[in-house]
Length: 255
Image 1 (tube, rainbow, N blue to C red):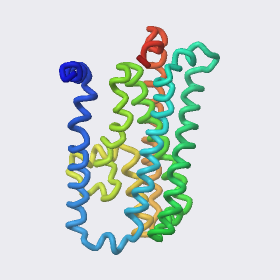
Image 2 (spheres, rainbow, N blue to C red; image 1 turned 90 degrees about the vertical axis):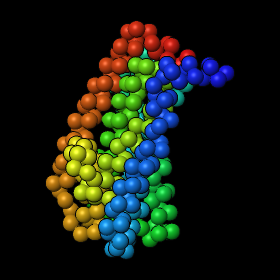
Image 3 (cartoon, one colour; image 1 turned 90 degrees about the horizontal axis):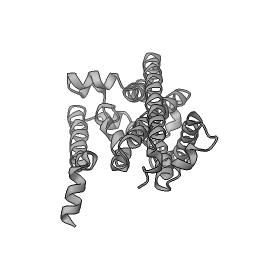
Image 4 (tube, rainbow, N blue to C red; image 1 turned 30 degrees about the vertical axis):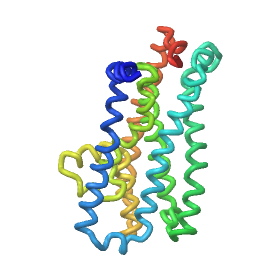
């Protein structure tokens, strides 16, 4: 049995990557949080509700991506992709259905949490006002884009990559500036942060809650990037689905 699982790991790089992934991500993320709080000891007192709001907005991105990926994986686990591929359902309609299910899963998960945050912590996410709609839209669309890329990878390499559905979103967490500003990151990582739609969203959230300023430039930045990621993600998914159907992989991916 030991040899069996050793051989399995040797032929599946996602499984090996997962073993090193979680400790490294946790160390990096909390290292940056500690570094920021050490130099800004009054941050929490000055910005009541900022950390709770950041957690809730992060959950929109996390659940948006996971909801998309899990809806796809449920079709894989039930070996239903082959049936879908010969039905009148078109690939882009399949894609739209996954987006709709992701939105539903996200609302079911986030709205009760936002209500409890008001009751327990007096932290009202809806104090962000209309910009909250923009933040929500950017984050869930970014979640869809990442979900499309994850599903494309699963179509390409099989269920050996299914754990990427949980890993992918946390890879960008340290550079998304969720709990701390982009300025706390090393110079090289700041460049990475600004090419992700998530960092401008969280920077914009802090600007409203701390400074009372709506940063329309950050919103425009985030929307411009997220549309690019959506196009890229959709292109990869549709191409991978086309190749998998053409090669007959849709009938084997559930094995």
